[in-house]
Image (cartoon, rainbow, N blue to C red; front, side):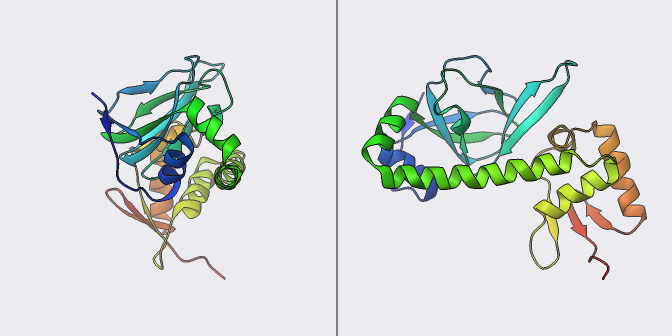
Length: 209
């Protein structure tokens, strides 16, 4: 059963709440539960409060390809905001909690409040930049270098640390590799001293000048 959230929310959730002129409805997902399927009518957009949700499609060969993976403070279905139907499947990779906002109410709010609509466009532009980076990574032919480029793009902090948000299999789908290829590439990077791994944590070696 949905639970209405009346508190003031930061970031994208606050923007969507103001545009929709109503509080978000909380929805909880268990790991592996579907949020929506490709081809279903677009009824809502979502903001993730906790957990991980993965968007995916089937390619022409019948293999599952990860289109995007989102965590806390990210919104989902933004690409379908002006579409009639969802363009991909969305599934919880972990237990997740989300807020949903009616698509129609958000679109109407964008027409009434152009300043807030601009905030959404700025966020969409940032997401487009991330998508272009992902395309660049997908165009790297060698699995080892593709994985390294992904880790470099997502590592943070002085120690260049990467924390695996889901599973290595999910990451493999995100960069267009089999999970076996990712395991082999990761092992080779470790042998070469280019990364260090402990469980879900990976540290990148400093770049050689």
